[in-house]
Length: 476
Ligand SMILES: Cc1cc2nc3c(=O)[nH]c(=O)nc-3n(C[C@H](O)[C@H](O)[C@H](O)COP(=O)(O)OP(=O)(O)OC[C@H]3O[C@@H](n4cnc5c(N)ncnc54)[C@H](O)[C@@H]3O)c2cc1C
View 1 (cartoon, rainbow, N blue to C red):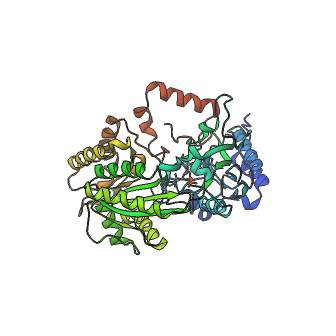
View 2: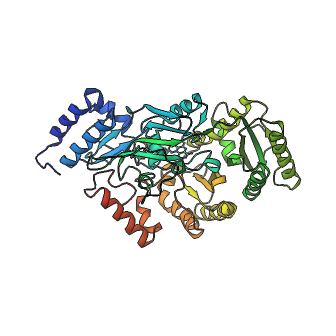
């Protein structure tokens, strides 16, 4: 129900009365970190950043905003890469940050589940699970900052999808504040529940367009007792994918991570990020960082890993490998992988593509996409890495050396279209894990069939008929 007479100032006064002075920020300098994406690609304006302390406060704030017709941008750790958590420049939307809702509500070791506030930082949740001798397997480069609610709302992937799945696979239950201020309590930890449409799946990956996630029950797992990490030189992406299939079979599907990196990526990291070390002495065109984990400790686990790698050498699927000699060396290998993200900044403009194809088509995609972008922009430097065990490639493209950065970045859409054409021709996805946000929303009518697009729009209209929740995100 709207209250047309309620001005923005009056609405903010009512919100302040709900959340208290600690729960609302209106000073421009204090709001600044909430209004810009970390890479600086998106910036917005807002009359206020509101930080409720609990679910009821979220519901009360949403109700006031609905009455005053104030649009809301939900925000977690603000590590998203498609501008979904940033308001538009018009300055009409408030930002609703979940950052004060950061309690671990309950850990149930028998259920292998954990109930948390949406604003709990992933690293904190991982540590709480570990303290209870359980594993929360979600892991990604932004884990020290991103929230459980943000991970759910983007259906995040990360390093361990191969074994444990994406966020959608890890959620048992949700608590959500709907756009009209009602609270849906779906905080169940049931493994089986076939009683009609499973509503939680609509909110997972909805990028804050259908409701505000305030709490979640997530799955936990037994903690692995043995983790073996190796850095492997491979001659080609095709060899890497073949190696993955062999390792999965030889280990009883114990591969938890399988990250591909081109020599360009590794060279960038070694050049620009202090502490990066290549554990191998000879250069290779491609590398794989792989991790296998087991529930119990045994010498035979490592031996069979070594045997599988030795067999791969004989069949020329791998040319060299360093298997971790210590935990510190494993960390160093992961550091090199993470450093790639940072290192690209120092090589001028970088046009990013977060795409996926069927695992078996990764090599074909890389060949075709590299040829296509080199044709469109001679001298372009593909910086290819990613979670190829999931068919997910970060197909990033650094500008040709010695060229103008602004002129190169002005070709962003054109060059992404070149990549997307290959992806769509191969039945792939133009956004494997980062989502759509404001960045790719205009692609949606092009990549969805008319039927699918119509259903998406109608689902949005059912939940949010006034269009007040994260407007202009995900759907154009
Ligand atoms: C260094 C780095 C590495 C990354 N690696 C990966 C990776 O490996 N895999 C991957 O999938 N992503 C990755 N990301 C992207 C990002 O970390 C994820 O998308 C993450 O899930 C975003 O969480 P967040 O809490 O920061 O959400 P935000 O950025 O704050 O928000 C993301 C979206 O979710 C919505 N949202 C946030 N919280 C809520 C809520 N409680 N209720 C409703 N809507 C909400 C926002 O409106 C926005 O649309 C990476 C990012 C960085 C910076």
